[in-house]
Structures are given as structure tokens and as C-alpha cells.
Image 1 (cartoon, rainbow, N blue to C red):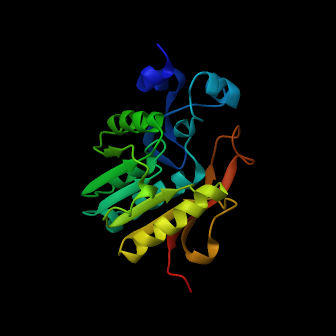
Image 2 (cartoon, rainbow, N blue to C red):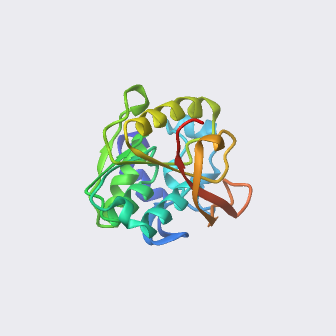
Length: 220
């Protein structure tokens, strides 16, 4: 059986359940530095027909955003929430824990969606999971849109920012978690909170990343 045939089985076989460092009340199926998954090259992953396993790591931006959500439930309780590029589902799970009326987790990677389903069940929450590329359509009508660590590449940033801005203009509160990636549009962001986040040293330049939660604001 190939990994593509059963993503859930592949995830279970290549991860362990860990509490998230900055949100220990949430547990996820995560790979660690000792496991083979992180040692594979892009060529090996391609040969296995696997995309990079972003879903197997609690990225700094997502950890900061999840912490902010859990610490500020009054913002999310009773609201419709979308977690864009959900990865492991961490931020979506935090929103459900904070009392959101509905939470939709979206990612184009089928492994991310399988991991999100496993992680939601692990944490006893209910999420709607979308596999669509939402950037190809107007943003959905939700109260709060959450987006962690999406400004790491220029092409992605150039697609995401106008889409997030369209959501903001439609009345959605847009929150971003980010450790200062290269294409973060600082001139459009209002800083709400900052945290020192423990991260996986095999993927980041430091073991602790100073990471902030921002709200997208209108252009000056």
C-alpha cells in the first residue's frame, strides 16, 4: 500500500502523539527529530509521491496563534471561524476549544486534511475540513479568519495577502501568526501579542522563535 492510498495509516506510522510546546492542552500527531520522516530528502519524498510533511510539525506561527485563541476565547466564542492552510489542524482545534460556533479547517494537502481529522478526534473536537484551494474564489463569509505561517514564499504571499484583504473588507476579522518570515507584510499588520515559541530544531534556524499574532488592517 502506498502512502497516498492511506494517508491516515502513514501518519500514524510516522508520528507520535505529543503535547504542543506552547499549547500543551492540545496534543497532535507530530514527527520529531529522531524519526525518519524528517531525514528524507525532497527527492525521496517525491519518489514516494509525498508532498513536504508540513502537517507533521507545529510551526511557530500556528503555535502563537493557537495560544492567542485559547487565551482570548471571548473573540471566538459563538463565531464562525476559518483556519486557512491548517496543516496539523492546531489552530482550528484551538478555535473549537475556545467555543467557536463552527470551525472550518482548510488545506490543499490531503495529508494535512487526514492529520487534521486525526488530531481533531484526538482532542475531542468537531471540525469541518475543506480540501479546496480557497485562493481561487472570494473568501467565505466567516466572522474570523485565522492564518498561521503563510508568508514564507513570495508566490504564496502574493496570492494570500489580496485574498485576506478581501476578507477584511467584507467584515471578517483576519488574524495572522508569524515569526517574521521573509514576506510578512508588516506595514499592513497590527501586533496583538508576542510569544517565545519552542520549535523543532531540524526545520528552523533557532530552537526558540520570537513569534507574534497580528490583525490585518486597512491600507494606509
